[in-house]
Amino acid sequence: MPELPEVETVRRGLLPAMENTVIAEARVNREGLRWPFPPGMAERLTGKRVLGLRRRSKYILADLDSGETLLIHLGMSGRMRVSGEGLGLFHHAHPAPEKHDHVVLEMASGARVTFNDARRFGVMDLVATGEAEAHRLLAELGPEPLGNSFNEDHLVAAFRGRNTPVKAALLDQRIVAGLGNIYVCEVLHRTGISPVRKAGKIGAARVARLVPAIREVLGEAIEAGGSSLRDHRQASGELGYFQHRFAAYDREGHPCSTPGCGGTIRRIVQSGRSSFYCGTCQR
DNA sequence: AAGGCCTCCTGATTGC
DNA sequence: TGCAATCAGGAGGCCT
Image 1 (spheres, rainbow, N blue to C red):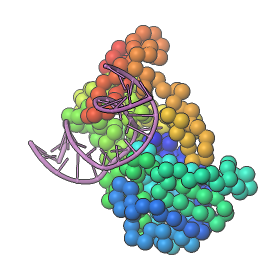
Image 2: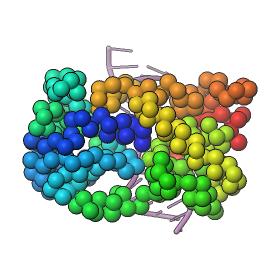
Image 3: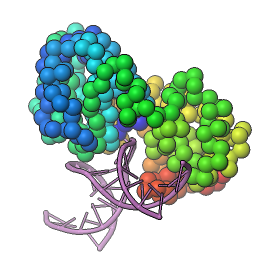
């Protein structure tokens, strides 16, 4: 489910339930997900206060008063459900457990946070807070696309000499951290750049145009509460609605929405993943 | 060492 | 209706 806007939406959805709140009890229903959970994870979470929730790329970082940080990645199918009744902030009394509920956090407020991940590509790990950024999964990440260090100079330099399609370059988390298949398709459509074009062969002016386009697309998607495909819900229980604004992703056969273009959105496969684009206005 | 391919896993959808 | 093939929002790890 989750690219940067979806993860940011989940983070915001978790805030009222978790921020400045003690984890009364953590329950762990399996050994791990993509990798084994760290030793004693349930004990290291139980009784600890969540000082804050940060996001880095597609990771959520929960800083605990024990000096450790819980690192969360949702993979492809990971979701967070918040349940319970508290000051009108939480939507439901606790519903029945579901298949693939792997980690449950009972908060002292009465809220329950449930991590469900059918495909188990997700990750949970614990790291000393001061070393969170140096964690092996975070250390190589490129700049945050909504931050100041992501700028035209950075992207032009990162693309220089790269012989890979721009689609793959933008999916490379070392170049810019947080884009996934959907938003790369949208950004390339918005900038009129073909996904098959080699990153190193795009003129600097066109590469530079990607920077504001990436910021705009991600910003709009966050504002819309992310994208909800196949009815997947966000942590708050609400549906995001950015999927209704897709110009390219999952729109094979539809007319291109670029004014005056008249082309049709096509689907091709690049490095095993679908790319949706208009061959008429994306060159 | 950049680039491409495979893999992990389950579930929904499509096609026959 | 059944069953198999295909596809899915990620990304580490291995190979060349």
